[in-house]
Length: 114
Length: 117
Image 1 (cartoon, each protein chain N blue to C red):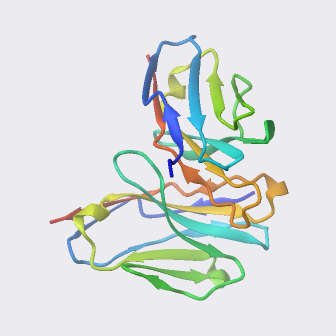
Image 2: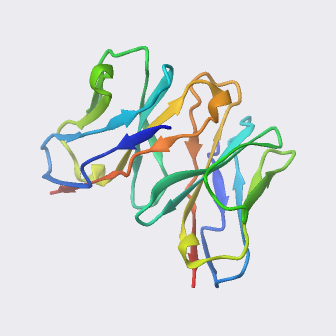
């Protein structure tokens, strides 16, 4: 069974540009989560989508947004990129009815903002 | 608010030594899960172990074992007879069992483990 996949693996942008990151969950999973791992800041929760709706949002500015498609895949959009947005962005997925809330992670997209 | 603290930023050992990683957490929730994840250089987070707040029984799974003490809010993790392949960053994490609370993992800062041959 395929795991969580993310694309692209690496993304290089310049300040002020927009970045779009993509995530495909494990088949059968309806929840998708986004986490940011910036140097020195650790892993921080960004967004949770379930059944196409945003369910929870971390402490990030509105220029971080996303959506979940009918096939449960997800996009994370970062507008007006700033240097501090450089980070590894990890996507995770889970079953919506899992009693363990176990989140399975993808390999990540490394975003570099120049 | 929830908080997870991993006081050790880096641990270096020689192969076959045991490694114990410390994790202390803060939460007002009464029902929660604690996790340990491994992040190798490739970047992907690999799930290792999970423990719920109702079960303080400590277990061993292969070379991994953990010590959960609710009284001290600690969830320590031990790798027995370490191997070079254990070199990675290890994260302790906490999540509220109730999805309505937001369903988000709160991570510690991570502990980098370097196992030398």
